[in-house]
Amino acid sequence: MTTTKVNERIFLSSPHMSDEGYELEYVKEAFDTNWIAPLGENVNGFEIELAEKVGSKAAAALSSGTAAIHLALRAAGVSEGDIVFCPTLTFSATANPIIYQNAVPVFIDSNYETWNICPQALEDAFLRYPEVKAVIVVHLYGLSADMDRIVELCKKYNVAIIEDAAESLGTYYKGKHTGTFGDYGIFSFNGNKIITTSGGGMLVSNNEEKISKARFWATQSRDQARHYQHSELGFNYRMSNVVAGIGRGQLKVLNQRVEKKKYIYEFYKRELSELEGVQFMPSNDWDEPNYWLSSMTLTGKVRPIHIFEALEAENIESRPVWKPMHLQPFFEKYDYIGEDVSENLFENGVCLPSDTKMTDEDLERVVETIKGMWLK
Ligand SMILES: *Cc1c(COP(=O)(O)O)cnc(C)c1O
Image 1 (cartoon, rainbow, N blue to C red):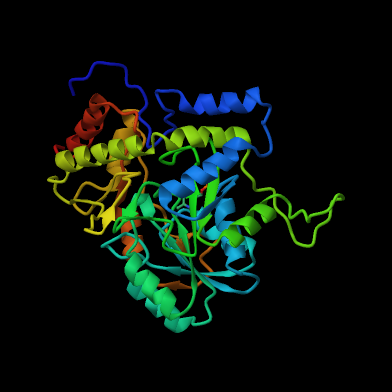
Image 2: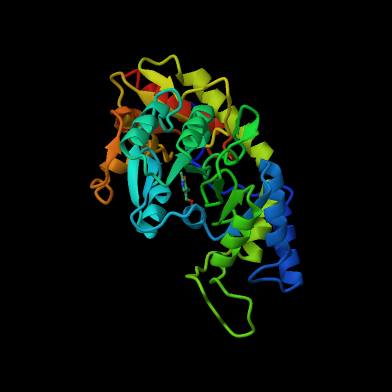
């Protein structure tokens, strides 16, 4: 390696505020008007601006993406004992809210074409559990699932779709934004997502009544009365007006972030795809991904563990692909439908650092370290 500069840490994906300082302007406005909490202009503005960006009729700003999935399940009428189909290859936050509702997850395998829920496995699941109440679809690493086939199947069985688009803000499937194909879509603004508010989430839907209901649940289900009166179970899930200010600023640079993520992906692909055993995450004609995390699988003599260790030694963060839910101690008692695709992706997958603050020098450092593994 030729680099002599101090090995500053390179992150997988870390917060990246705008150069223009948009976020601080909105936050300052909240301070100046003392609209610190709970609601206010930024919350309303963020909801309207995000809904417009993705092309949805309405949105509710919430405290996390997990909270948004929870309220989506409630809005879809999922309750105790109901079955919910859920991709096995995902972050646990997709599946946990099913348990919050005392419902029962059935985990579904991925396919290699999308890394997301496999339509064939989904069809098998419908045959086995025709009474299923809702289907959660995830767009992993910003790659869109095979929505036409999934929507068609869910229509045929008349089951609600909840799209976990936590990782795919900025991704389009056939020109339409992911998160807007189902009855409900959710986004996350956690610290490592493509844009962040430090923490937060959004529930979107074309059903404005359901979104109003979600806002009501998220503010402790307070009935219209002078005294505190509650006819339903409530939650403290609303986003604060300060946090929403960060979100409004971040939304202005979303397109820039997608462009940079794509640049990072193309850089890696150009430099690494010729190495023996390397295969990059899938690309499909229908898909315009946000490239949240550039990922690849390794099936040659260089194993993922070699890459993780070599990068860590250079102070560079990398990660395995999500460990499937049906292999998690907490979830292994639930049914799983599919073959071994998600397991293979987990065993062979590497998520490369995809931080939008990376320079070409940083990318070079990552690429040289990885290439070195093939020279041993
Ligand atoms: C981050 C993430 C979530 C959860 O979002 P939070 O805002 O952290 O609660 C849900 N699903 C997936 C796939 C995620 O990556």
